[in-house]
Length: 273
Image (cartoon, rainbow, N blue to C red):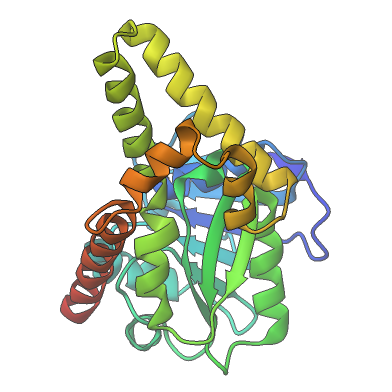
């Protein structure tokens, strides 16, 4: 088993169940760091990497994790729970990436022993720039929560939530949010082409504009309104464009409607779980 080096206070052993998009993003982010953990990946087709990987929980052997990340599709939790439950102790922290599967449901499936923590991550975990909304119930030990936060902060920021229901809103904003950004970059590219620029030039301009603006937000913690003002001269070109975006039915209304639709879908998935 490969041991990666890290600054975690209690490095321990990580069992990652599911290495698809989000589980794979976490794994890719951890590979960018010097994390000192024994990592075992359970996935029929794990991405190539230094970690030991098996296809089924039944193949894990005597591996006893300190941390478990559940990154399978919600519909698979019933299938994996029995084998997983047998490997969990009172000191184990279980981090669920599964949208809609509430703590009460996890407790019924996994027993009273482990600390249960729900997290809504996003895809930029893969490049160490993610953000996770984290909810831990009152009965979760502080040490388990700290261990979970420590792990996730290797791949970005962690925002702790007071209410489990807030995870639906986090899903709509940061969980789905990267797709909104990519879609806006697509729209910016299309607008550039409409103005007469070649498609390859249009996409390069749109991509780097988004990348540069994101980097500026990271470097300058001024309010977003202030950052916008820095680009906008009264009566200038940017002001003219922002007038269109800010009109009734414009960008603010569109994004609000989109986010409400995403949050509603997250809530519906939770009700069905």
